[in-house]
Length: 332
Image (tube, helix red, strand yellow):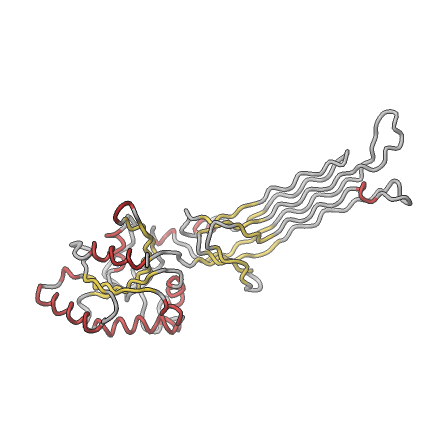
């Protein structure tokens, strides 16, 4: 998935259908002079429904279409015939989408499964005149109009729903790792903030198993206060099952860089500390044997109870071990 088609925040306008009018028809038949009221009810207006779809990864559809309208219910007719209900309008969204009322900011739903949520109910159909017949009113010439549908603004906010989220500073090698493990083609360059929007890819593991990995924009100090990409980056971390901190092997102080990353996540949302995580030391192909051994010893001392792997996305060194470790953590 490329940056151009990843959209994670949109506002749309929805309108449910109006209910159909009830009928004021009177029964007419040869040899029956006063058949009485037989006007049928109007049909219900169509609902606007948001439905979770596991095959979607982005809200890009809504860049090109912002207005959604369900069908109106049909009017009632003779012989107590009820008008047809208006067709419901289904709006598919990726799993992990939050739905808000655009005007009030109230959260309507959180779509985490293939469920249906009615965001704009259709108007009820009006009752036909046969309902209003009484001993004192044998020929009611009144039927209810259908109720109008609902119009409202809806905001979709997508938080990436992935098994593994990559956390690191710009140029840590996250995009290169995603490209090496999956068929995703993230933009890769040697300048900061190459990744401006999350990229997703499916990592194939052993015995036809797989998991979803998300390359999330690089974090900087002060991200929790909105610096750099700030909350735009951090909100996507909340939905990942396991976090992989990616720290390049040529970093001056590996432990210090991990501490800064961890602090930013904690300041944004302390609950992120409850997630399973590991550390990946990237660009191991740049190390000679002596330096490799030294960094491995440094990591063992610094990350006593934290799993870590030295790897290279270029030479594939340590990649199998990295995937095995992530798979084990996902299945704990």
